[in-house]
Figure 1 (cartoon, one colour):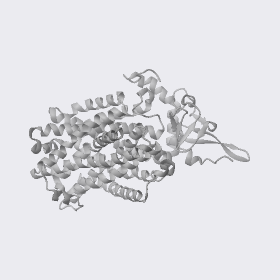
Figure 2 (cartoon, helix red, strand yellow; figure 1 turned 30 degrees about the vertical axis):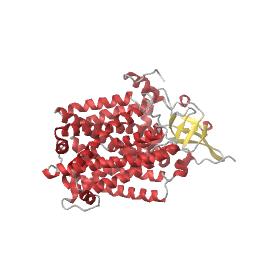
Figure 3 (spheres, rainbow over the protein chains, first blue to last red; figure 1 turned 90 degrees about the vertical axis):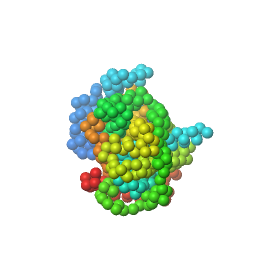
Figure 4 (cartoon, chains in turn green, yellow; figure 1 turned 120 degrees about the vertical axis):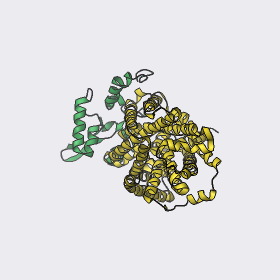
Length: 128
Length: 403
């Protein structure tokens, strides 16, 4: 049997890092899939402010979700990375997906295009 | 040879990071009112700062994680929101005090109302962060911090009794106004024990890509850099005790504090005070603003580095871009010295909340491997945290009744 992964100790809240060592986000929640007559399967990790704030208080989670649904550019649900893409856990969670494919940096891209690029010197050296 | 150069640069940077608006204000206040009697508080706080700085650097060199990173990862988001929110508030007030302090220094040399300089200081700070790199901020601006050694020179030139200094280094109870005495003592500790310093130091170690090879340098930089910083703070206290105290000047404003160098340096006194004080404040504006961005970005897991261009870590750059105008507004609305004393008391209040998890992390083998704290380090760590708890509880009542 492969080594067991303590999800709370080695996955939840850890830094998610892509193959190029780009910081993608923290693991804000872990999604389990219930199965009939079998233990639940770990489906995905979620990188989502809604999930993170919901862990502090459900009303904060609702508020974060309202903000996300209203303002988040071009996305209808929080980004999830399927657990099969997790290659290593510990003090960081390494995934085999490049950050662009996680859709976790939509705000980063939106800010870069709409705000940072409009400030002088914000996009020196061209678009990333 | 390169290693020695790096250590020397690190020591200089640590002095600049140590001496800021709060260090000068609280040490001047202490010297003016209580003579040498509060020297022991500076010595105690400096010793604590040495241990905490070394631990922060070791955590970063071994794990490549900062305190904010590791607190979120080990204690969870729910716990992390508490130090995150209190540190954001305290850092914004501190940033306002540092911007205000730099503006006051410009006021001292020009005579123009300091408020005119506040937006200018804020703009220059933002430009340096926006266009600069970590190395430029760490080394370039901090090198200027050496000018703060003028306080040590003034104390030496005025001549002081080593016996009295020795007595001041022994903890003693006040002969009068104990509430004010303990308020100043807590403010001095708040000015040296600033939680932002430790996360900034760890972030700097990650920015500079420290590895296990840098552990000896970390120990030397933390010890000598902080000790020199403490020496400058003692220089301020001794100079204020010898010049302001005997004339009954109790430092109700920075204009009064600026007179402390006149007896030793004559007509150069006020301009040199303004230069040293201004540089001490300005060299702290940048780390505090950066630390706000580090704190939020590390806690949320965003990409962060002052060495990246703003387009490469947009959210990180946006945090300091918002923080600077917010603090600028606070600086425009507040009285600089009061703002400084309030931010030092707030630092004292939150120190235990921010630093207690550090001790736990320093015993976590997942982060520190075989470089965890030994028994002596843990005993000292517990004592430092206990001191921080006592100070945190006492700070607000002392601020109300003694401030």
